Image 1: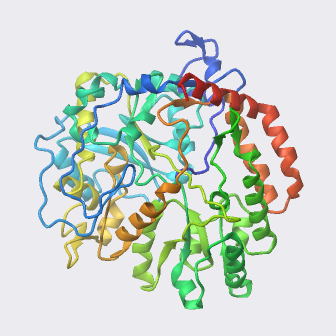
Image 2: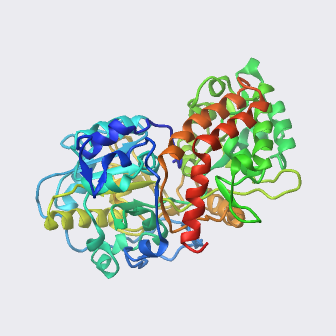
Image 3: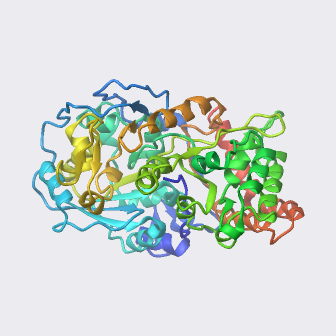
Length: 555
């Protein structure tokens, strides 16, 4: 899963509809216009100590000792599927009340709905209450989300990806208007009532606070790195080519792999990873004399931009990527029409499993990380959750308790019967067991399942060996363990930032201008003009905001 995806921005009118109030209305003592993307929203930064005061008390719930223990934000790894499972939840969470309406994103064919789906029926029987999921296309989720929020018709449980939440300035006001305040339900030792929610990482909960109150249940990331540069190792091996160890070797490898006559190009999108190879920070870094430097001011950014623009100029990037903001690079990679592209590490196992059935030699691997000009690379990363699950406001204490018990069931850990049912369905119907005991989905399982319970409940992420990806766990955790020391330190860890409107409005237009430079539609020399405009129209305001947030937290 990518940590960010394109979507529809939320403008002032959308936010007015979201809150469900007119332009003259007030909220929390301030005018609603302050919630919009228009000038006037200066942003807020909740101090780290205020956030810590409302978090659940962390209590791990590990049922099985991992074969490869994770360190910090790296998940645990298991090299065998357990032969004996345990019941993690002994009391049925539901009370037979009304069906629980949910909405969450899904990047795949839409499964059958409640009443026509045996997987939903099996899980709901265990829950003691019907969950009625609405899965929406993840690539257009913003459209559905904005329409739903604008109509104030939110479901009982609403999953929102972090990249959609971030588009709404002053989201804390929206959260206060539409969603339940979960602080008293989950703060401190109160979370012990829901032990598998309490076992979610504290780093994920820190991002779930808006306006100083706990507003959502997080779906933790399964690893903190934002991107990897994947390559078709099977194709490189077949051609007798080695993985590159420098930008120069990467460029030369691209020349050797690209053959337009055969419909093959070396690269899809790579710019974010190239910036990391050149040692460029993701956004801000501290300057030796004080203050913050934006990545556009770092010479490493200009060098990465120039290098990537040369890949385009030399015809090494697939034409679909050249002509659009986002080609279907996953499909191009699967078919061998591109040999390298950047993606989130969460894409790895699913694609490897799927494609091995089509082409047994298929081997998807992240390129080893390397630096430029003798320097060290810098890997971008964060413990920010992938999704947040919000509870509809005004349902009453008993109903909220029922919903939290259902979410607790959905977060049951690896090694439990609840985990197996949630992830694989019913044995003999939705999955069969391989010789090593690991579940393999049947055609019915693939058709009926769409993470309907996983994406709403959070879970402690683990990596588990399967028969069709026998080396994946070692390779995934090996990549993390080798490179975790290169991950950029988060200057704002534990601080809740709601960014100034002028800053938020700048980001996409500036990225569009840089995209034009990469593709040769504007000269490299235009970078200086793009930078000047960026800082003049909100970039300096953003710098001052971030510097103050650090100063207020003694950093």
